[in-house]
Image: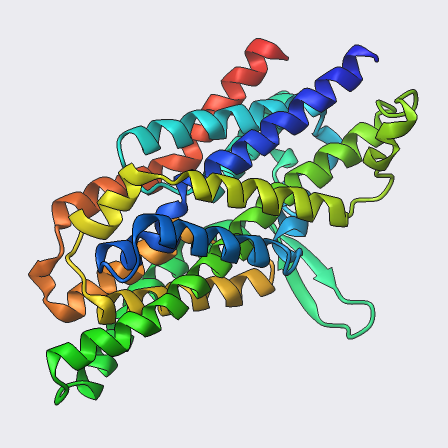
Length: 359
């Protein structure tokens, strides 16, 4: 094997390592509420989330295409670019996991990709696609790709939507159950929360696994263009990707790896989301999960790489605020928001620096 081919295989393993870490780093998104309300035991919740993750990851590829071809100019992307992008994202994910902060793996990946691509283009900012118009040849419909439309706008709007919709949904549920007995409320919503937790697990897989699928497809596409796979052994022929596409085997591998990471669990972040930020009962968990999962399902279907972490965290905040404004630990929320704000610039800088050292 050539050194370029060995590097390609190493990069694919690193990308899958990022997917695995994404699984346990973001496990809390799917199961924090159902564990904190004691509807399911941690292991039962993990099994449910891993299964739902697997199904969600296989459901579509709109987000994968955005990540792979809609954010940076692929002419400047090399195998080394992808390696440095993933290393920057992994370092930040592990750091925030250690401190129990629910930062966004999605934004860590996006920041890493932008920073490494900028480094590989020798600081040419034109490598970043800020806005790109796309016209559907069949319908004539106009849509937009690019960092502004697919990252910045969703990064601002999805947390706002999570908070507002979570607040409204919880308010409606309070009105609906105003005359119910506490035991009836806990019994009914304890069962319903199993459904909402599965829905949230599906949304997590649907939103987050696709991002790594897009990175793998981009890696293989650039490697094929560079001729890295020309002399590869026959058993590696399935890696050949002359046109950018998300092959079925990529979907399956990413889905399985994320599900495995989810099964491993991320207890530090689960504790932050499920216990420290606001105390919840099954009805609150149901409201937060249904809100977060629905936002992920809608944005994922139109190719927006929305942060699962931001969405469910702000949904929990909205539900908590509807319960009682001071029921939320706002000092903890401030720490979380700072982690969100810093994720893209820090991972971009990390990946840029790593490329300058290794490239």
